[in-house]
Length: 110
Image 1 (cartoon, rainbow, N blue to C red):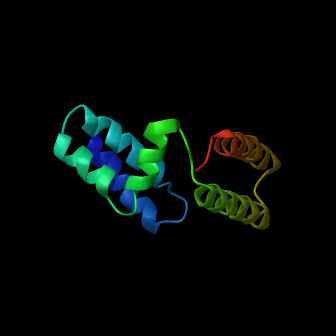
Image 2 (image 1 turned 120 degrees about the vertical axis):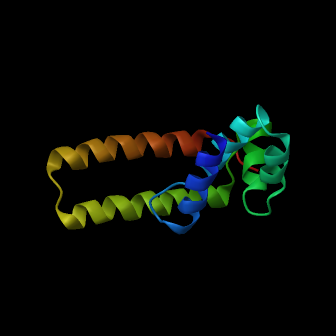
Image 3 (image 1 turned 45 degrees about the horizontal axis):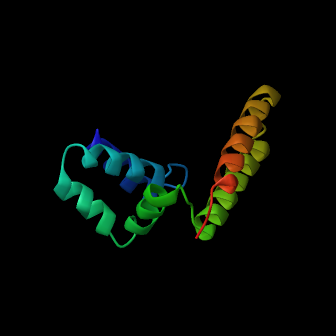
């Protein structure tokens, strides 16, 4: 499970619609219970480590990550509008993305 999460997170670093940090946090959670070496590697990783440490310490998401998430969500929603998806799909997407944004912006930041 830990390896799958880390692989998905690495793919997310390259693919715009796949999240990175949530998968890395899940990977760290799994490795904390199975592989201390992999857990330490994730926590000390120069790109992923700070976000994982912030989340583990206080459930925090950095301001830059919040802004990046907001821009990504706006881009995806705009693309859906441009593509002319059915109104029901747009509505479901709007409710889901609003929930995601509420969650992200109510987390503390450092």
